[in-house]
Image (cartoon, each protein chain N blue to C red):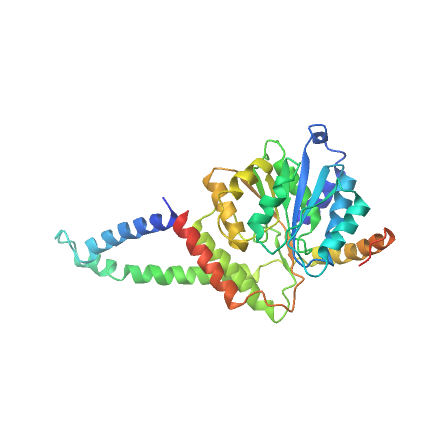
Length: 92
Length: 266
């Protein structure tokens, strides 16, 4: 199953459960509070996910490593390489 | 520890490895386009590290008809280091990464293949940890070892102002979206610093249809689908192309298109 299909399946399932509870489709006469809580759930989940995403990406950007050491080492090695290649007769 | 330190210690403390007797050989594929200045440097680094380590290797330069004379420089390098170590397999035009790998692999005599950028964004010393993970050890024997910028001590150097905020945000944001949609089991899908077992690379390349760095993404996704094991090593990516904005609208659009295609087809 492709990821797309997995998502469609999952969303349909959750959607069905939500509709069932929020609109009392099976006429189970659930307590009002169930329906009142279920009704805005999709929006709540979307917003929560949005906040989670922003927080996660923000954290990862803030803690993204700078790798100064690797860059410095590379610079030194480039100098060494150019010298050595010149000696070996490379015309650049 | 940082994997840079670990790489160094693996490199210096490891004598001629036992696997030399087993005939392990590493083929480094270097697709190039206009890398006249960087090619000698990356080759020098590879020769230095491989030479000192005792591993058996070859470097395959796949130049796509670079107008700046990269091929001439490659020929000079071949004279200096020998045509058993530097193989030239040029092509007439810029034909893309996937086909470059296929082309290079046809002539690779190693049983392991390393792919990396020829523009010095990848620090050669990390390949020693890649080797570590790929060998048949209790915790190793990975089919594919991928260098990741997003785990542990991995990261990027060179994103100064004005990219200070923009590039990392896009990079991390795109990676986050990729993780959510594809759940690929690997932290860095667009990276191109990897070690593959040759058989694994061959079977993956023929299955992958995307272009550019979406191709790199597809390789890992398909690898997971085929139940290949993927090891990860934090690496430093040194972005030396400062002034050029790599984040054009085109880049973003093609990334999203590629991501959605993988989402819908894998």
